[in-house]
Length: 430
Ligand SMILES: [Zn+2]
Image 1 (spheres, helix red, strand yellow):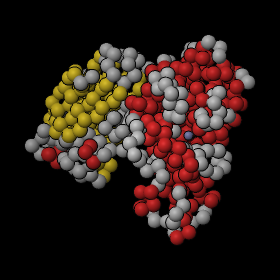
Image 2 (cartoon, protein in one colour):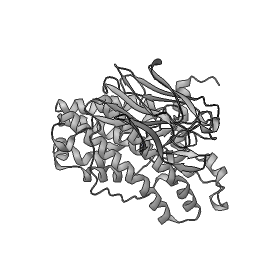
Image 3 (spheres, helix red, strand yellow):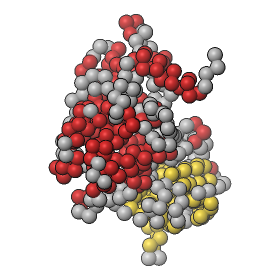
């Protein structure tokens, strides 16, 4: 049969829905998570959404799942750039970070824009769609790219006989999850839509990685029929989801009401990016092609270097200050070894400057050497070659509207085992 790709997608989707009811992400927990987030937000946020506030947790956070039955709200989960696509898979399952960042930008703009113009009901509905996306991405049933139905994971974790033919997806995500984030202080993630979407993307990454730690324990608990253990792990995922949802709602309201002046809404002017996943790790882990062979067999690390690939050692550089050279420990930074390229998408026009300290590790890199190169939109912007024992160099560049930042390292020391290259405190500033 010759199916058009579009028809094929529609068919696959319908089949998925038939197979396991709510095939995509949390079902009932959507409401618990959204309600937990709403509960943690300040009274001023509640006032901004008025009567729609309760409906956000009760109803609107489910809009993307109900597009075929709740026809009048379906448009709040659709995009102008994708006319006719009623069910947007990207609202449930992560694709590539640039794509879902674009989707977040679109819906944040829609929600904040509606709020700005006093269309509170529409603002709340678009916000519901964003809540849904965050919750689904951070759901334990969506954590393994490409194995949404767990057929691969069942090979790694063979089920007991009584579960042999059970589909796990629905079991992993459903149940009653009583979640609370009482005391959580929601953050405003940006003073513009672009900045907010960019930082929200990275917050969502934290939730996805957190949820990954719960998936196997949930499967094992299901096999053992231990429903309490299932719920306990689901809660671990749901809690971080609720925190990110709280940040998102809080940010949309700040953008829509233009509330950035008071201290509580302050957005930092400088942001470290060492903990962000580069585009080379699209599914938030380093694929094998990102590994380097020297000074050890490994991949870029955040916050430490690995001595011989085994022992965590703090990031340390020689720093020259007032004509004196001293050793400084950096908590934030990247150990990039002998060869690596790290690419970061930037929110265009939000930050003015990028700065970073580069050098060889003051102890482990004594006999190494390396080149450090910064590219903006593919153009060489700053570079330096350094040897072990030399003080670190502070590289700085004006971003001038660049959309992409790349940090490229190549180790060049005669002693490859000593090429412990470090990018310390990579920071964007306004
Ligand atoms: Zn969903």
